[in-house]
Length: 537
Image (cartoon, rainbow, N blue to C red):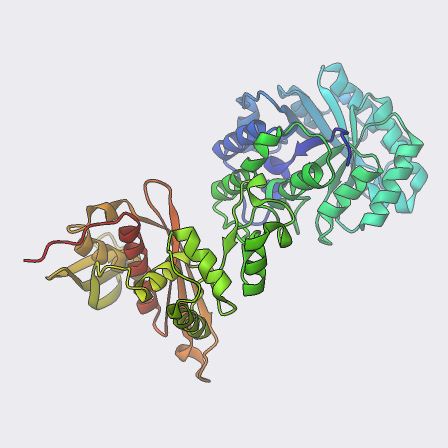
């Protein structure tokens, strides 16, 4: 353990934008930058001024940060131009920021084959460009592109690039594993040699994740003397991504005892920061992400759950609430009494451990899981199944018949449209409701028809919205293939109090499976709100 300070440099707003399928809006950048600032990140890199209209607009009206320094990214001056006469560098230097990080070549192969200049000229390009940043009163930083490849190929030149940046006034010289091909022992040795070569330089580390080692490599660099870590939220970035700050931060603070700018009371916001970035980018969170994933502290096997109940430290390396997560006891075909009882305690079901109904419920869960149900992903459906088995679930409504039709046609404007229509018969109390719903798809149409039938009796259902819908085709259990396969539907719901719950449906028919999951979602809301049953006439 140590009390030494490590500085955190976030590159999500630039590196993250290189992720396949991701494009930041100016609004996205503004929201994320402020969230990083509030969390306690030291440096927030906003992007590359002059590179695209989004970055130009963002740097034109930069966010007002109170904790973090706002950084512009760019590259060193081009060969054959001075630092004062390079339009690209001028755009970066013209941005009103606290600091600037420039990238430059440090691998002799790139200098001689890509830039086609001498090694000496490359060194002068680094020094003069960094000096130009310092002259503008900005904090200067240099990112050594492909440093570890360059070090292996020509150690002397790579180290001279570090010195060239230092001589130009660089506050930080960041060693970059640009293709993510290095391993922790290599990182440790090369960073150690670099620090020994120039003891006064402040070294940073920037690792890509192409070998799955970005977090481990970053920690190895810190062990060797680097005191700035660059990375992204949730490991976003091109190819396999960058070092994940969401994993690095608790490792630094909780495991290694390094000091950061993040106050201990802010660390429980780690989960919400991770989810905020995913939400802004319309990405599903990684359920198995270390520390912050929904499954990070989820106990499935009965033996594990039993031990975890007695002492959570048995299978939890840190208390989940430390990082804003929560312990879960999952229900599945590996379920034993320990899991069921733990889950019952979470939802307020009181039952003796020797109650014979437990054995029956466990057998039912295992049989349904074998059929394709997934109760560890649909906790609301499990609770409904359990309460129904224990006689604690009112008959809020029942669904009789339903029918769905889809029509593909050209409308009066000559536009091709596809519309879905659903009819549903729903019994509420002693009254039968026959309703019709239209939607942009069959599930949306069925949901509309069901709500029309139910909201008259249960107005509170009007606040329920579907936030996620997943379909998976499972291998048939009886040897059938193709259309005879089983379909599993998982639906996530949210209400106006931001409470979230998930349900499951399984059938050979996708609409039937969807109706099961939809009806469970409505029943769960009614049960949770203790909705009164409609009066019978």
